[in-house]
Length: 272
Ligand SMILES: Nc1ncnc2c1ncn2[C@@H]1O[C@H](COP(=O)(O)OP(=O)(O)O)[C@@H](O)[C@H]1O
Ligand SMILES: [Mg+2]
Image (cartoon, rainbow, N blue to C red; front, side, top):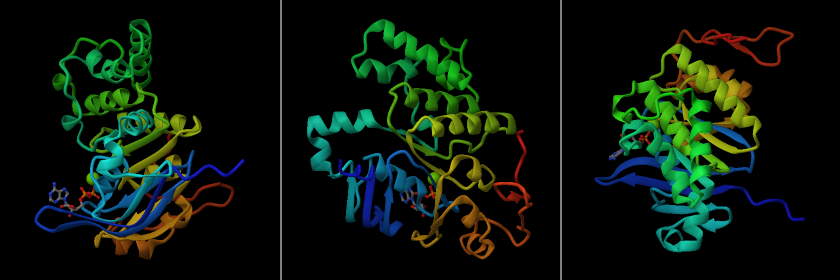
C-alpha cells in the first residue's frame, strides 16, 4: 500500500492581512498523519494565521496548501463533499474562546457539532456528557458560556471541538491565560489525545509544555518565517535560536540531567 499522504502540505505559503500587514512569509512545511506538532513563536509571528490556514478559514495568497492531498482553496472548500469531509476531519480551537462560543448554554455549545453531523439524539447526549466529563465541566450543562471563567471557556471550546471527534486537532494556545492547575489539567488531556493517534498541531509560546505535548517543533521568527524545526529537545536546547526569536530572555539556561529522557528547563514544572 502507498504511504499515506501528509495531512497538510504547505509549499512557499505567504499571507498578509488587509492593509499589507504580513503574517506569514514563504512557509514550507508538512504535517504527517498521527504526529503531534508544536508551532513555537513569539506573539505576532504568525501562529494563529497558520492554524486558520490549516483550518480552511484563511487562504494562502501565495504558495500552495494541500489538505489530505487536495488543494485547500475557496473553490475546493465550496464543493459540498470535500467541505463536509474536511469539516468533519479537522477541528480548530481558537486562541480566543470568546470568538468561538456562540450558543446560550454549555450543553448546546458541545451538542452543536454532533447535531450537525446528523447523530441521533441519544448519541448526541452521550457525546456531550463524555466530552464535558473529559474537560472537567460536568455539572455546568445549563450555564451560559458567557458566565464561565476564562479557563472554563477554554475547556468548553475544547469540548466542543472534541465532540465532533476530528482526526486532526488544531489548538491555538490551549494553555494561554489558564491558572497553573487548569494548565496542568489541559496538558494532561493533550498528552492523552496525543496517545490516541490523532494528528495534533498546537500553537504555543509556553516552552515548558513542549516536551510533554510535541513529537516535533517548528519555530517561527518575528519576521513571520519558519526558521527551524526539530525535536523538542533539539529546539529547547538551542538557546541562541530561542533568544533570536524572542522566546526566552538572556536568563534562559538549560540543564539536562543524565538519566532522564528529556532535558530539564528551569521553567519546567514537575507534575509527577
Ligand atoms: N485581523 C488582522 N488584521 C491585521 N493584522 C493582523 C490581523 N491578525 C493578525 N495580524 C497580524 O499578523 C501577524 C501575525 O499574527 P498572528 O497570526 O496572530 O500571530 P501569533 O498567533 O503568532 O501571535 C501579526 O503581526 C499581527 O499583528
Ligand atoms: Mg496567536
